[in-house]
Amino acid sequence: MVALRVSSGRFFTSRRHFYILQYHCIIMIVAEFSMVPMGSGTSAGDYVKAIHRLLDEAEMSFIPGPMSTAVEAKSLQELFDLMEKANDRLVQMGVKRIITSIRIDMRLDEEISMQSKLSRVRSDGS
Image (cartoon, rainbow, N blue to C red; front, side, top):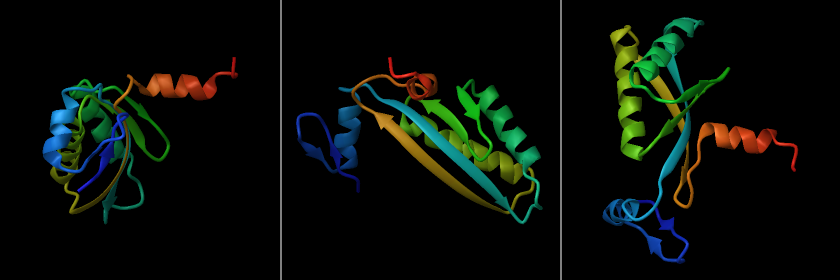
């Protein structure tokens, strides 16, 4: 169970409260994930390309990186559905074991995007 604190200072500690909360707040998610196909050799390029094709097919906004891929989602459900489809795609390619790592930035107070986060970091401070 995860405790979620909102600006009122009130804590919500149940899944039921979280789903009620999501209808009253802006929820924007930027996540970064990596998938490691175990036992499939030293090159993962074909697997990475397959996942990127899946993201294109799903019309998800994403930015590939050298060690992970960043993606935008409207909900945790959308994100985890995507992770399940990505795992399924690797299984279809013959992978027998997959290690998935996900980092999630979920904003409840304002809209964010991968581009807004990058612009903020790249700005010269003015």
